[in-house]
Length: 458
Image (tube, rainbow, N blue to C red):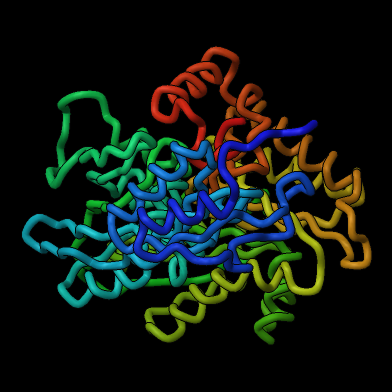
């Protein structure tokens, strides 16, 4: 079909140059091979925003020329949430990376979206505070992206996900207005909670320019960390449930199946896999000997073996790094799809059983790990690199896992967001009425559909 365009690409770029301080030719790292053929062409421009005015100028250009804007932060999305679309404007906030304020008195920090999670935590610790959310991407992911996806992490079991640690945000809306939502107070009960609406919205409702996050005092006492081994993941799940409700308030309860432990052994040159078929990594950041005695008793009752406990910082750091290296260890040398389901805690063991049964029935190799303390499971399905297309049995296995998760009262996106990988499942998870409300909210905030289209909802 012949299309008579009102503006050439050069005219759009010339106008964009009048609106922003740093509009650039496209950078290759803005894309991934996961995009479909229809959306794998080059975007029109890449904008590195340094100020709110740059964001507003980019959105003004997009409105004038009806062009999609793809927000990016540190480009760590795992669900095609920030990859450039054909002829879009990529808007990066990675250079907006100032820690504006750390207030020990108010127990908050005020940061720009490009501040890396781990960097904020390090700066807070210099003042005896810390920032609790710790996704696996903590050393590389930005606070803006964490907020946009409601990132979780290993300490969610005790300290909650990103949404539990954000008090306020500034956001530029699609029409160019910058609005302040929430604030510095620990309690807020005035008006509709638009702050929480923005958290997890994946850049589809506005562009985050500033975030107010909670900081917590570093707990007193000596942290204790350990590992325990079990015959299978179902046994791990039962032990996790017992520890979770015991009153010891663990900071970390991470489960890894035998396949994952073996992959880590290959990657780290360790020898954990010889012990048993599943591993539990646990941590208490306070509570002392009384709490650890409770954990030891539960592990004995749940028939754990080869339990090792340490208070040595270097040994604890090595165990934490072991968990963070899970993904590169599993991904190494094979095609993979990693998923992100969460179920009620009482349904964790049934889901573990089902994944194991599914792996055998469909002859699919699955590596299962996750934040077991909050019911978040990350099964990774792999196949040989010699097979370029995703095998049908992999797709069937994913569909069946999603359906089982929903049947157990869970969600098919615990902490990685939706992006383009799962935006067809909104009706299945949310139901028709809530699905419609999602689209109505999107239309209210972004009537021209220029903000990260095809992500979150389709």
